[in-house]
Amino acid sequence: MTKDLSHQAYPKNVTVVGAQFGGEVNFMTAAWSTYLSHDPLLFGVSIAPARYTHDLIEKSGEFNCNFLPFSERKQVHAIGRISGSEANKIDELGIETSKGDSIDVPFLAKAYAMIECKLQKTVEVGDHTFFVGEIKNAKNCADSFRENSTLNIKQENPTLYLGKNTYTTTSEEEHTI
Image (cartoon, rainbow, N blue to C red; front, side):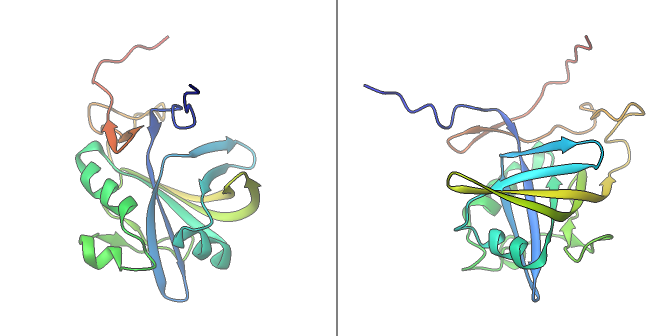
């Protein structure tokens, strides 16, 4: 018997991707995202073409990534389970947003960190599209990050996805090597 290992690359830091086009705003949960480059400062996220957010990013050429604390894991999960083509998630889930600074996409007010990206490139990777965005702006909540730019996990616990609708976070124990 062959074992399916396709979803065993976890844990992953969860981001909630936001996009807007023609007055339509949507957010979706994504675990397949990463920083790509320092110069220029690039970030990428992998999204299936069937997702409503996919079309909004393609049409608008911009997106944001919102990082929410573990205390918001139920909302993070709900955002990923409702289709934006069928429901207004902002209204249905009572999502509080704030106006974007560098792009025309609102961000999640409860995010401890958020990045705004202009689309630089799309790459077809199997059954997903990898959107590469240049970071145009970043926002961090006060005290969420230390002077050395590392997340202060005594202040904020990131939401990590383990697969199969299971989430975890970090402990307050740190080990600097």
